[in-house]
Length: 339
Image (cartoon, rainbow, N blue to C red; front, side, top):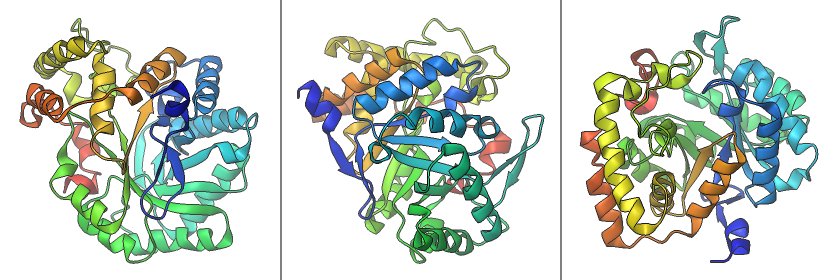
């Protein structure tokens, strides 16, 4: 596959969604989720992604209290609007200290959140709009119904969901077609395979997979065994990066590194290639704030893995061997997908 073919490759997001690139770009890390970020480099990364043919850009209105949307808005203002498919999450409530206060999926709140997002992004519509989590106090039918009204009004093109379980997905799809389910999926987080992924495929719902590199664990970043120490870094609170859990998980990474070496690729590229081989209905969303990491991810699109190689990769990092949950207990409790 030539470089041109890499950048122009497209797949349909679900059975009802837009044509998107085989990789998406997740922008959360550009707003301090993994420690301090540089706006200039983040903007350059956004531009490089669009220039390389990545059109799916994912954000959340609560990423640094709107900073992420403002950053993206400025960056995409310099590109044709049709070159970008904006995926926006809403509903997470935060305090001025950065703490979490739950989720709001009420119809009135949905309309309010979108109004602010459109202003910060500088656009007249959002391509895919989704609640970040299930609001346990509001029926999913009400939340999806409110977004459906915004679709009818032209402010939203498609409806997505995030981190919800199979039963909730069925209920939501009965109200309005769901384009995609954004959910963590990687070699180290394979819980969706038993029930959620089969139901999504039955309903024609695509999967935008975040955490494909397991917050950088599936890369060369932590192979020396150094745990993250910046208290503003999400990973300092993640069980997988703590103590013996990190030690055990890095053994899996080393096993994958041996396989990657035989292919002449990096651990990160091997992990991305594995995710791409899970089906064209799965679009990995790569979270990066650096152009060099983006280039590394793009090169993974051309990696071909045989059935034997895929089996060897999964044997090197069996799901049962992963140590630690993917979120801290309080955040795990908020995931409908884990119930």
